[in-house]
Picture (tube, rainbow, N blue to C red):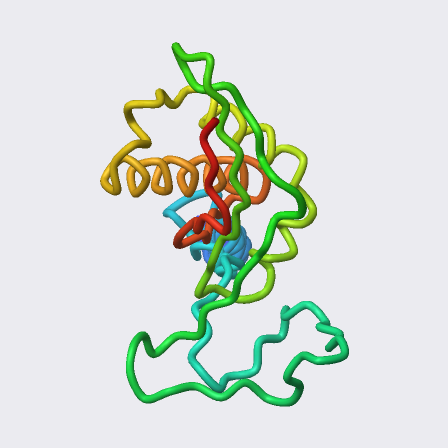
Length: 195
């Protein structure tokens, strides 16, 4: 009987070693698989993907704007580097001037309004590039705002300032819809006529 007990003991020893080695291999493969799933974000939340902030940045006075449109100086205009004073905002302001006038009927009136407009931003040149690219949609939005303005609203300084805010919001809405970011700080009247 000792032969039988030796035969039974040997397979049990070998079987135990095979089971241990098999368990280690499975744990290693399983652990690697789990690690891969965690790293990929399938389980456990994983590493959050860092998304680059691609919004236009504020440009400090004197800083280089990598997105600034090329400006050609015309005869009679000052050339060279801009000169900034010590006061005011620490950020530079860039302006966009709309070509031509905006003319519209006023709401509930036979009167017409005709304005020339400019807009300002303290953000980098991408905002100005977007203004040029989407000018048609912006002009349409601005005309809608003008058409929704009554004559009584624009007879006071407060009414004109409120109109400027509404025009600013209209531009930012178009830019946000098209580019994901507004960036216009103010709208200015270059001319303002009501007839």
